[in-house]
Figure 1 (tube, rainbow, N blue to C red):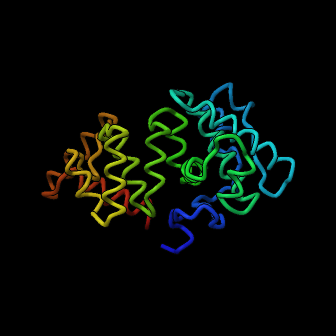
Figure 2: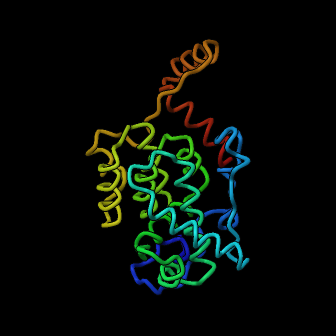
Length: 230
């Protein structure tokens, strides 16, 4: 992993770092997808950190967002606020300047946390938009660098981790504890997934596993490894 993919440090005037995502910062890729947000897709607002007017809109959005997050259950609204935070930081150059530009009671910590959420890979943000991962849990997932953030995100979905458990796991992993070990303490086995298969596929999977003296999981892993990485 390169230095550019590490979560930013705590310095308020630290320059903004490149996003850990493939799409342009502020681009409403997830929020504008009808398959995710339905009829609200056309309401998606993008923020361009290179456009002064868009940066001003981002600043206004960040301030409004900071004043209306307590108890918010609208995941799409939360992602919009996160996008505004990320674009504002890139637009002005640092977390400290972004907080000053937004004004009000907006803090460096607030902007940093939500900008990190927007910088999460799309695969994770889609689950936030769907309501499978709470935005408050996403804030803690975003604190963790590299592949470990995926492991924690999928543990939320497959292992039903609470926000408090996500916060604790993220802290332990950032302190150097292996993610699999931290999850195991919460009764989550990394890599364990329940699948539903068509009867004929299930029947053949069981038959071949028996003949080859292997487990169904071994065969599935082999096929998927070839599909994803072959």
